[in-house]
Structures are given as structure tokens and as C-alpha cells.
Image 1 (cartoon, helix red, strand yellow):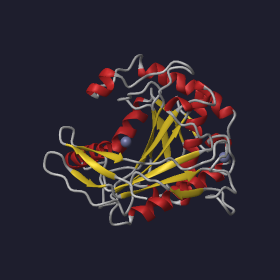
Image 2 (image 1 turned 120 degrees about the vertical axis):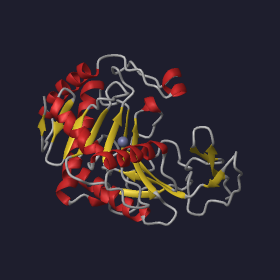
Image 3 (image 1 turned 60 degrees about the vertical axis):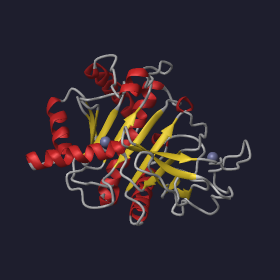
Image 4 (image 1 turned 120 degrees about the horizontal axis):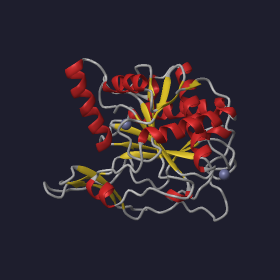
Length: 329
Ligand SMILES: [Zn+2]
Ligand SMILES: [Zn+2]
């Protein structure tokens, strides 16, 4: 069927909006989980699975469009995939074995390689939304990948900063941020051989944490086997910490920031950002007037005190989890 989808350029904010008109929900019969093994799209034996989105907002055969200088349009080129993280219907990364989460990382790396090599793709963005609070009703553990034909503004801004910093100092800004966080220590949570978890100095969401590499990698496909294992380990730890703080049903977003696939980006680093809107299990931070309307976050509280709470939660979480690193602070 014909779908009208396109990119519309915002000439004021200089960013694209993905317009997915007549994007229809998958025709799932209510009550039936589309991701459980044996479903129409999930036949066969698998432990992790990448599914093309049947009605994607972006596609390689998006219709031609024409715009002008002021109201720019572009074809909605790209790919959208769903990543099923495990065969089991319930649970999250800490409930799965480390091996299961390694398979998940391997699949994200493989899809990054495949999607990133397509001529119409510039940037591959894996992410996970979890929790009814942020509109995710499907409980079967899943993530998504958007392979974009443009570099999204948040990553573009990071690249610009990394390049500028690299020119001035000859080092990666990401490496220097992590070194400084380790030196100050007051916001560090956990580290293993390849990655570290911390609340960034410039935190926006109440319990936001970032995962930076201690190794020089710019994207998922560059990770060796040992580093994939270490990344799986930190993901299990972060989610367990959130569950410890806000309960099993807590809402969070996990975003993989990796270098665009258009060319080399030596000063960039693969990293993960976790945002949760929770202050407590039932008190929520909204991106409201000043945050959304002015892109200026207010942080209600003292970051270092909250980082202390996260560390206390991490100590409890690690009593209940097999892990490969060590708690910090
Ligand atoms: Zn299911
Ligand atoms: Zn980032």
C-alpha cells in the first residue's frame, strides 16, 4: 500500500522531522505477543532476533519528494528494525544470562555493520525504550534500531565538539571526560576492564548515567569479543541499579551513541546514555516548559548526592548479580 512518509526540514532549529503519515501499527491480534517464539515473524530457533519493521517510518524505497529553500523536504530513506533481546516474554537484561546479553551486543554490532554499509545510511542508532510510563506497552524485551540518512543533531553536536577539542588538544574529549570523572570520583559508579559507568558532571535527568569506553572504540563493530562481554556486563549492572532504585517496572531509555558511518571519526567514542524520568518509583521528572521549550534542563537536587544514592543502589544490586567489574566510590 502507498504510504506518505518524508523528512521535513526545520529551518529554524536546523533539524529533520520524520513524518510517517499513514504509518499503521502492525496488525497484531490483541493478547498475542508478536515477539514470542513461534509467532508469524519469529519462526525458527533463535536467541536474539532482528526484525525489519513492517511499516517503517524510514525505508530504502521512500517516495521521491520535492521541497524548497524555506520548507525543505527529503526522502525518508533509512531502515527501522526491532531487536528482540531474548525468547522469554518477561524480564530485562539482569534477568538474562551474560551470554544472552553478549548475543544482543553481537547482533547490534552486526546490524550496525550491515545497515551502515548501505549507501543511503549515514548513522545507525540503536536504542531501547522501556516502561509503560514512557508509552511502551509491549513487555516482551525489545530494542530498536534506526538507520538514518542524516546525522541526528545530538550526535552531530557531539562530533563537532569532539573534532574541535581534538584539534585543540590532540586528544579525544570523551577520553578526557572519563579521565576527569575518574579523578574527581564523586560521580563514578562502576567499572570493568573496558567500560565505566558514571553520572556525568553535566547531568540532565535526575538519575542519568553514561557508559564510556576505557578503550579507543568509535562504534559497535570495532568491539572485540572481550569488550563485547564487558559491554554486556555494564548494561546488566545499570539496569539492575535502576530496578533497585525504582522497581522492576521502572521506565528508562538507553541510547547507543556511535560514530556515523559516512567516514572516519577518530575522536569520537562509542558510548551509552541512560535516561530515566524517575525521581522515585512514582515521582517523575518531565521535560516541560524550560526543558523542552528552551532546551535548558533544571536539575532539582545535587548531582553528587544522587550519584551517592546510585552507588548505594549499585552495592545492593551487585549482591544479586554475577558481574565482572567493581563498584567505585
Ligand atoms: Zn512475548
Ligand atoms: Zn552521547
